[in-house]
Every structure is written in C-alpha cells, then in structure tokens.
Length: 344
Image (tube, rainbow, N blue to C red; front, side, top):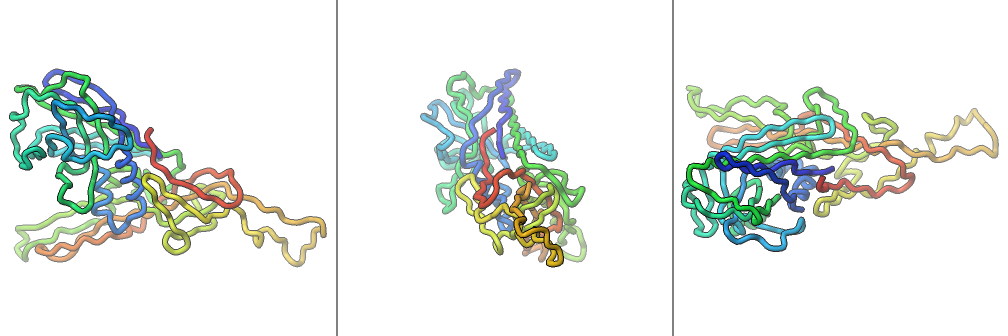
C-alpha cells in the first residue's frame, strides 16, 4: 500500500506555487494502526484526515527526513479553517483533495494564544508548511500526534502579504496492488485506504432535547474498514481457510507494518486423500499443493449514536458489510507476511 502526495498548491493573490511534499513516517503509522482498531474508530480514523496546516516563518527547519518527528509547536502558527475536501474511490485507489482557506482560528505557538487575525503575520517569509489532523499543541497531552507531512519552502520567496488571499490545496493518492471484492454495492472501494472512509451505512435518527422537537442533534458517521480475518483461497472473493483476528490469529504492528505470522500455504492432506474404496497404487501418493491467494477480509464499522440530548453515547458498530483484498501467492509452506504502508 502506498501514499503519494500528488500536489501542494499555494495561491497568494494571483501567484501560484506548485510542489510535492514529504510524507513523514507518522502518517504511514496512522494508516497501519487504523486497520486494526474497531473500538477506536472515533479517533484513529480521524487522525488520517489532514484538516489543518501549520506555518513556520523566517527560520527554516534543518535536516528534515522521512524519520523526523516534528510537533505542531515546532511551527510558529497552526491554521484551522472550514477545510473543504473531495474524495474519489475506485477498486484500488483513493484520491483525496483538501482546500484550506478562510482561516478562522489561528494557534500562535510562540505566544501560547489563539486568534483569528492573519494580518499580524504579514511580511513574514514562509519557510515550511506542515499538515496534521489537528492544529492544537500536544505539549500538554499524554498522547502525542506529530505532524504527518511537511513542505520545505525555505528556498522560495513566499511571504504572507496584505490584499493577497491565501489558499492552499493538497492532493494525495493512496493505492494498493491487492484485488478488491465487496459483498455489497454500498462498499465499492477499499475503505481502509480512505481518510474519510465510506458514506454512512447505518442511518441514525436525530436525538431531540424534548418532545417539542425544536432542538436536536443530528449524526452522520462514515464507515471504516477494519481487518476481521486472514485466509487462504483459490479464489479472489472467497476464503477456503479462514483465521479470525484475535481468536485464531494475532496481528503484530510495528510502526507502518502489520505482520501476519503462522500461516501455512499448504492444502490439507485430508482433502487430497482418495476414498477408502479407491486404491490407485501403492506407489502413488497425493502431493501437497498451495493456495493461490492470501485474502484479507475487512469488516466495515461505523459509530452509531444513542442516549439522550445531554448524554450522547457513541458505539462502534459492525455494519454487516465487508470487503476482501486478495494478494496472489507463489510461496509454499510457512508464511510470514507483512502489510506495509510506503511512500508512493
């Protein structure tokens, strides 16, 4: 599975600058973690959404690599806007485009304050732009959420200036070589690749404050793909021998890799033995053969809300829909396989 940044476009007035940025390891780790955590879909899936951008002024970062761990507060400001996005999905690819403008909340990490006035930063040279799921400083939080991607603009003369509207566009392409099959037309693409998952599957009614129905809370929650089982098969859309995660199989996750251990790609000898009434020859024996596909089955989960207006309860729920990712196999015998997120 690969994540590739296709475009970063900075528009200042009538000027346009097009780049591609560096995807940091932090972003790859988030995609790997999100595939195995159905109980955390309220947070782990949201962490894949790059809704905020951050600016560093005047002084550039030094020695930035894909392994760098950079925090929001390493920048000067974090910008929050009503980020617009569009997400296109097909059998093996998700293309997502964000547009950041009309910034209505600014985190100033130097002063430790928030404001809504971008004009005070006019005349400052932009040396780097970061992207993350939140613009909040993580200094006071036990769990840290470093920046997911960064663009070094220190070699370009890009300044915030008066009377020049700032618009930033980001486009990423997330893809897989695995072959896709779904048991429902509602799931027409591998949802685990999509930062915003699939459209809502389980309808959720409003929760009203009282019987007058004048005040209410409404809900729309996307569906997300979580690994349910891993199996072996001769078919792309069917599992002959299925191992359930957590019951028959343990997935180990290290950074951006999910390791599957303990699979054996050999058809059972019992399935190859002839009937007791058939005796071909004392010198003839059934031979071991291998399955053609490793098939990963994903169940689609969605948060469903219940409770009262004052106390809304969010429950991760199995929608009953699933899809398969089939990977051709040539190796026979014991398998130690990895699902790995990489840069495109």
